[in-house]
Length: 128
Length: 110
Image (cartoon, rainbow over all chains, first blue to last red; front, side, top):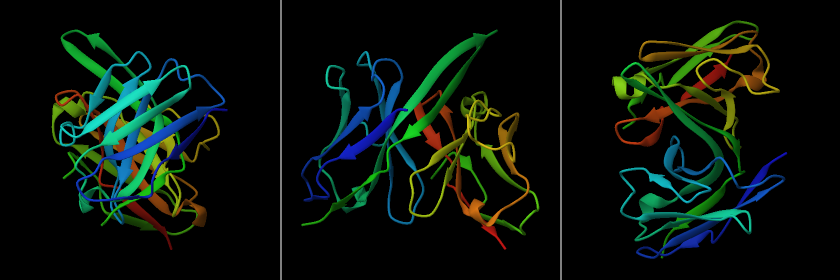
């Protein structure tokens, strides 16, 4: 079965760039929408964004100016970069496999989106 | 602030049934399909329900989902102490082109 594993530095200095990688094993990264989600200490889940294996992306509008998600299909991993970090970016970062599709019914466009396989998460602390 | 509203906490006794609500603030979310995630203490979230009411393989039928209009509900029957967890609803915000999660509900099995 597909497994995801996050990796990267556990400590990042303020104003620097947070970089994480999610390695996909047990399946191909081709197809699906590969997502990043984070959870600040004691708080709820926050969606960061996704990348389709083709390279198309969608980001959380509140983070869009600082986020880049990329994919390497030849090596079966995808990555997150979050620039200009502050203490507010301290969180557990999860990668996940997502499924997304939409269809039209009459004049309304309906969307499906959910994440069916998650990594165990990695803690990133922003501190000098 | 989440655009999906969940009660912060619910509780019930073992063996009983509990429901957790998830209310969308706009039709941009309300037209779309809802998923539910269970997060046991200290672990990653796990998909419980997708497409409003479908269960992934391995999820017991004690867990069910429904949706009416802009509100969704997760139901859990035959509560067990192992069900104590945080539960999150999720969906797609078509106006923002972004995923969204509810604020989460902590379930306590008394």
